[in-house]
Image 1 (spheres, rainbow, N blue to C red):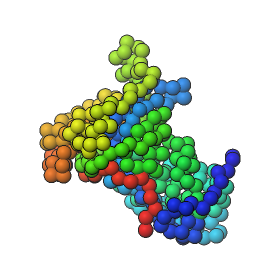
Image 2 (cartoon, protein in one colour):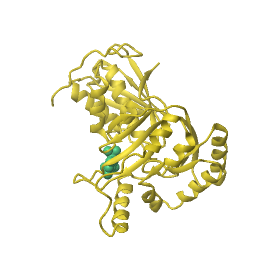
Image 3 (cartoon, protein in one colour):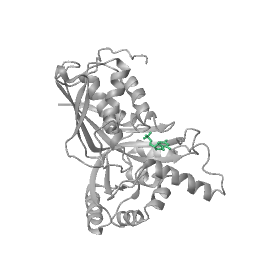
Image 4 (cartoon, rainbow, N blue to C red):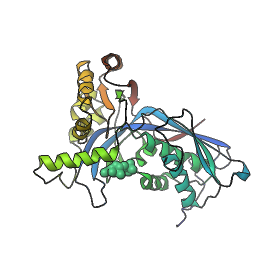
Length: 328
Ligand code: C5P
């Protein structure tokens, strides 16, 4: 493999790059404000047009320098052990650290600690945020000094949703969701997330999307190219107009997620009846994202969702927030 050139990062913040014994990074989960999906490519991935917004559900990865005799091992510990989150090579955090080490020629290992706040397999890119945080944390710990451009390239190799949490705020995504352009916006949005008892597999939701598209288009499937983002959505973001944004929320994967989990329709109805401007499936689901016009209404929506018993848990978060950053 060609090694990326490791240069000191003049923008490095927090602990002095390469000299700290421990680096802590926070990275946000996301909601898709708009998600249009085209027909699958030969490699099975679907072309997307999407608008990501980073929400204040924050994953934390701490990278610790190892004793010299640790022989370059990459280890992962969960702050709150969870059977649904592996700590071996299946975890994107471990794969992110290994990819950065291989790409830069680093041979030292790292001990990684992960604290999760984004629902697991919930359609909010929690695992992708973890990978983004691990890339940034190891880049600082090892002093590899890659800039944002190189980190975004490595992130895209780990998964379609991994680049966005490095960038944060609100961004347009093309390609498979990995080619990003920041979007201008103002204001803060109040979100309420209804979490399901059990996650949904992203590939399973895309597969159901393909089946439903084939059935509804008389076998033709989804259009080859995804739709473009409506001008009304970018205008709503520029104006910071939550009501107008609510009118533009759209998710092509919603029908597939509802087909796999029909009970989610009731969660959407409950949120909208309690005052949400709109409630939609977040990404590939099963989390339902409800946009509220203000904080008091968000509180009311959260209470109604809790009382309905239709979801496992309810969390509130404002958005947009910054991308992955070194803290402490
Ligand atoms: O890239 P990532 O590993 O996050 O994607 C998980 C799965 O979701 C892929 O294996 C693929 O089945 C599906 N996917 C897709 N089209 C995309 C993104 C993801 O079909 N644009």
